[in-house]
Length: 316
Image (cartoon, rainbow, N blue to C red; front, side):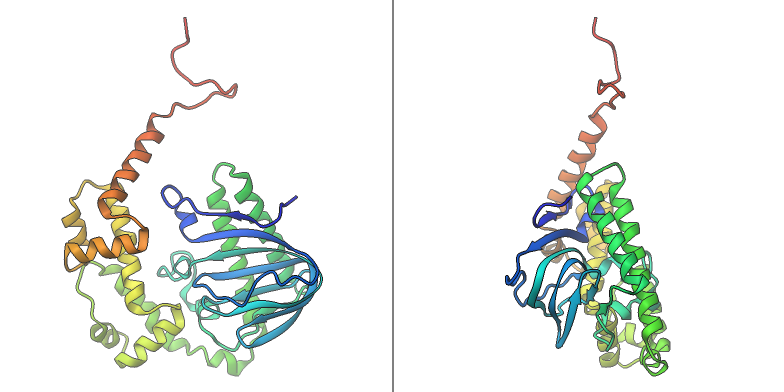
């Protein structure tokens, strides 16, 4: 069904979904270490389809077998220490901003389960209902990515949210009352409100002192809690949201680059150009040109009939 280590990568020009995740399938022979000790900024969910051995995530080691699921935060060191039976697995990786975008895709009160290095078990055993559901959803998502049928991006995004919901339920059921208390719900709500405030005021000057005051916290505690909860610093979050807003305006309006720079809260055009290129790989003007060209190409492409012929005037 799958080939060895198929990688489904993003099309950043046309599909928003593929800015935020990739999925791959991997086969590893007995005795081979398939993944060296490494880390990356993306969050990752992996399901063991066949095989057994020892897996390490952060400082914890887990015996794994077919059907087990692992979840780890961005920048968690992880690797396979030992493979006792031939291993095959399916993995999905996605950037934290998919779930910390102000609750648009994921309820903020659950964010800490995935983005903070709290003492939860990153291993979900095969016998649990959550692991079984996640394995199924991962494989279905991978097939959608490979088939590229119409609206597959929407389907995969929906399935990813279902996986995260399964994990949230599992983690909450496993946590003790004292561990739940450690979530500091009251302070999480302050951060949620702060994130909403940021999203509503991207064009305005935002300072750490002002945001901390709005959240009723000291600057240092606010910064620490924000990064702990979201996996990124407050400034990286603000910058990412401003660039996302700029991308939308470049695609959907004829506003000048200078106007977009000001409307997205950048203090000068040089900083805007530099930051936009660092995050997207393109300058604002280049991004707009590519976006317009893609839109024009899509508009010019005539629809096809069921027989594969284009609609239009018949040849005489």
